[in-house]
Length: 114
Length: 113
Image (cartoon, rainbow over all chains, first blue to last red; front, side, top):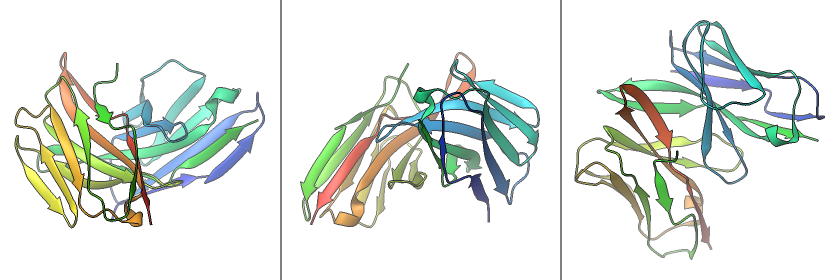
């Protein structure tokens, strides 16, 4: 089976501190991976996606960055967190089934910036 | 630009009532998915619809894809408290030669016992 792990599950950080969120995928190779942010009770905002090692596309300008150091590892980072970075961060992989695309999500990381 | 609008945004109903959630777009989608998300968890895929006019049923949930593949609906019969959650539609399409997969604005459903 294909599983997505996210670490940590929850995080409380002060403004101006660095950030590193990790997403790892099991059971598949060369997946397309995505980082989303979700504000409380709202829809998903796509932040970054990656089609392979070292390949990152950014959807919105912000103080976050992403990296894909290994095939099954996707990392979301920041050098200095802002209050507005608080939210629920979700990692997802793309699956293709009978010619159409679906996304499967990890359990998420709840980030609170104080 | 948000291309998938969901309505209503919020819905609070009593157990046993029926409800319909809508997902609308001006774009044609090659397929459309519905997800349910519970608080503190990632969205879980419920169903994929592919063909215009397609209807799929998942227990008390009925999903329909519009004939023109620009809209979809989710109907829940005899809602139960366990149906509470955030419902998201999503789909993939190609614009200006670029593949995009986008999510709707979400419908937050609360079913009261």
